[in-house]
Length: 290
Image 1 (cartoon, rainbow, N blue to C red):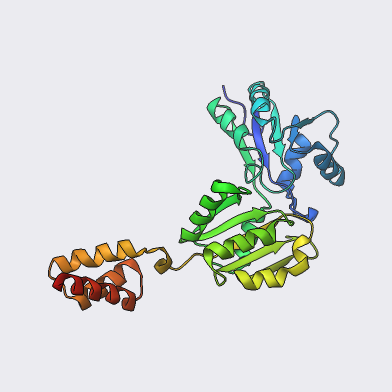
Image 2: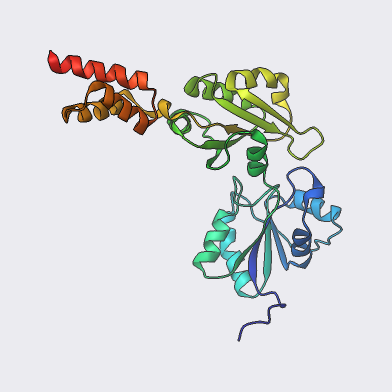
């Protein structure tokens, strides 16, 4: 027999917490924290401060679950939920599992077929995205980039090729270096927005081409707190290589299509300037007559 709907059953409950402004904590978040049997936290000191602000007694309910022990702790959390406990999980700020621990806890609970719930709320990712002024209909989140080496180069290359808006997180002392790397790969004019101090008194968003935003930031880039970098999509033309364009034009002209018509068709299909496609078509025609 299942429990009545007004009696909470055991579950892992992911609770979003404020990213700067404590006024953003929701009534549902407060209720979940107050009623939890266990409060698992990325940093128990920060969570204890939040609970004190909310006048919630933490007593012995706090449990430390962070990136370095999440895999081990996940097994204990599953057993607590199986025993009927309500285990709330919070990270330092924002939604657990988004560039923060939490993903492994969720996966472990799902694999163990125990309930997982969520109390949504503040998110630096979404706040920066909607403030950026860049397209929001399609976007991808890349979290923190690798700091160096091939892995970083590959991720930068993927961002350059993205035809949707990209959001990344960065620490204040590395944000200018990351923007300069982005400028090298994407060019100085690719539109970006850099948000800092979100929801706080000195919230600020710098917008413009990459080179311009670097100039805008100046010394402010060393401000405390993580920065969110939102990168606008490139034009389709940037992603169409010469080889692909040549192949498309050649195939049409091989079937008897004129250079002009082939160029028009390929330009429309691939989203490249007609002049560029026509130049390729003229080279194909000249080559066939040679």
